[in-house]
Picture 1: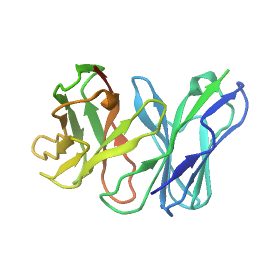
Picture 2: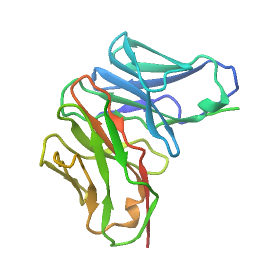
Picture 3: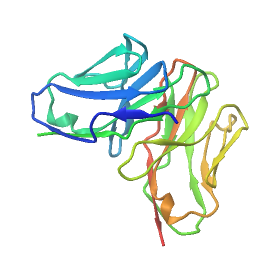
Picture 4: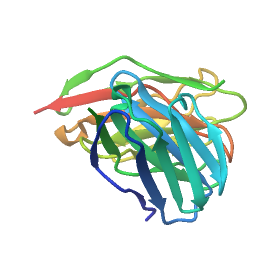
Amino acid sequence: DVKVTQSSRYLVKRTGEKVFLECVQDMDHENMFWYRQDPGLGLRLIYFSYDVKMKEKGDIPEGYSVSREKKERFSLILESASTNQTSMYLCASRINRVYTEAFFGQGTRLTVV
Amino acid sequence: GNSVTQMEGPVTLSEEAFLTINCTYTATGYPSLFWYVQYPGEGLQLLLKATKADDKGSNKGFEATYRKETTSFHLEKGSVQVSDSAVYFCALASGANSKLTFGKGITLSVRP
């Protein structure tokens, strides 16, 4: 089974802190994603990486950056956390082939106080 | 660009009721279509998928048919159970190196 593992289930950070969310997948997938999930808004794509060191902005990249130094790991960085970044963050990975689905991690519930 | 529209929720049903959750899409080319389910406190997991017109995806009693003429992928189940209570997301992907585009999700609650 594909496994996508996010480093934390719950995280509480202070406003202004730099926050790192880590995601690791074990199936050699080329594509990795970070989504944010908020009530009434569904899943919104923050960033997408289609290969090591390659990244593409999603729909809501402001206030976030990403890093992909190794194929299995995709990190989301909040440069200076703000209360409006309190949310559920979901990482996903997908093999680079048509017709394939994405596999998700369990999510990180981030609260910024 | 691509988009997915789901019916508004939440939906509350009694056990053994029939379920339909509507999903329509806009996409270039021939997208693959997916239904994901999210149980409380968990990430998303794939429920079913369809990759070409008239394909029917099915899993755990749920079904959805890829209708290109109406650009729809409605989810159905003949008899829901309490354990089906979850959030359901419709999604599409158009190509290999492409992101998945999601609908807003709908919360289903099934009462005994």
